[in-house]
Structure formats: C-alpha cells, structure tokens
Image (cartoon, rainbow, N blue to C red):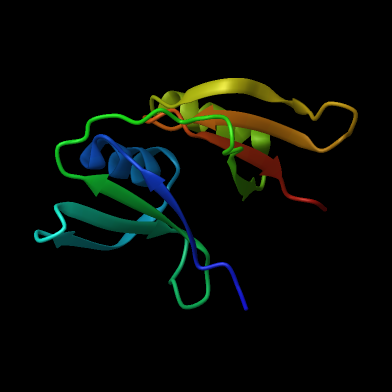
Length: 128
C-alpha cells in the first residue's frame, strides 16, 4: 500500500495551479473537467503519479472559497535548504507564515508557507 494523493478544495483553480507550479515548482500532471458533476480535478506533484504522492486540487464549479476548519494540519515538503526555499517562495509571491528556523523543542529546520486558499505547507530540511 501507499498514499496516492492529498485532496484540497480550491475556490480558484487557476490561481492554485499557478501557486503549486510557479511558486513550489510542482508539475501539473493531469487535469480533467467533469461537466455532469460540475467539478474539475487537477493533479500536481514532483514526479509521476505511478511512483510519487501528489496533490489533487478539486474545484467545484461556482464555489469560490471554503472554511478550512480545525482538523486539517498541513502538507509537508522536503527541501534541500529551508532558508533558500523560503526565500525563493517569497520572491515568487508566496506567503511565509513561519520563518525558517529550528522547530519548537527540536533541531530540525522548518518553515511554513500558505497556499492561496489558506492551506499550510511545511518545508522540512533534508536530513543529512
């Protein structure tokens, strides 16, 4: 067994795709409209779905925002250098919600960025 994807609902599919591809360097792997269901799915990631876990963005036609709730935590992405990654994200218009630095009560370097719909994404430094 393996995790295939994490699904996030978005109120603006083009804005969300631009964030994940232009700010976080993911690739749009596939996208499909479902006219009968009035929704569109877009799958993004760093590699082919056959071997990598990806993000599924779901856009329900006519819905422009969602309340995030308190149950969801975050998505985590491993990066070579958290400080460099955070700066690149900031330069591309990404919103840093926790500056890079050691995690609370630990030494692992992390940062948090927020996607356009408010979902938090943790950047975790690669362990050497």
